[in-house]
Image 1 (cartoon, helix red, strand yellow):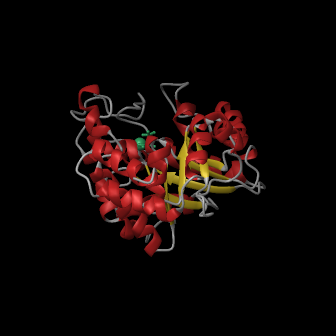
Image 2 (tube, rainbow, N blue to C red):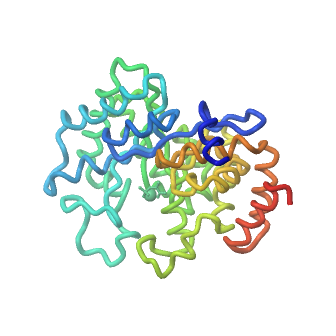
Image 3 (cartoon, helix red, strand yellow):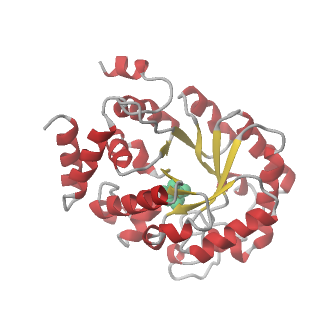
Length: 316
Ligand code: PEP
Ligand code: MG
């Protein structure tokens, strides 16, 4: 039955009553594009560009090398959406030539956008390469920054994009609780939000994502995390802008329904999860997803949130 449901699941992501939720792929580079296309991804919701920077521990890849890699990805989704995240170095993704070696708390130090603002040349090269890669293609390019903390960060990123001549939508990842709490102010500077629930959980619960002993607190079903998702989605709705999810949370089919019920406008995940999420989402109406989301948020633990959502969606 499961196989039949998956086989029947093709086409754009939507609830049973036709509320569209684009299902996008998380990729690490051109090598992941085939699987994304195969799974019927409607585009890329998170292109982690770090992979390009791993070949050389002393310097950033040349503009030419970056243009070639970005172009390969953009060409695979003609008319589709491709959301590229600029380099997210530091903490769990250190780079020798960019990441300070002597930080007591690397996750709370110079990482993500902070690294790029300290190395404007690296950011400028990446944005220029993206602008060149997109030239002449019909693709709908979106570029976002990791680890945006506040409106000042968002403005600095948007300014850098404009200065590089990038014709794309600029967005901010919501990975720090302050960004969720002040999402409306961040949206004065950028055109979309994308929730990175892996880091958002880490920073909300003060639980290092690399420490297994605190994994209970990394559970994306935690009601406090759902609260921050709702805040962000509401802010985006109020501003007439979009708010997707590109963290691991989007790949859990039941949680994908809850996220939809919270107002999230797209879901991005590893390609292998797309058919499962598509099939599950297609079983429930938006109103059911909203009820499941409300039930999950009314609990006080990840376990209870999961059971409550399950109970609503399976008709109690
Ligand atoms: C996240 O933090 O949820 C995210 C999508 O980014 P990464 O896992 O690459 O830090
Ligand atoms: Mg992250």
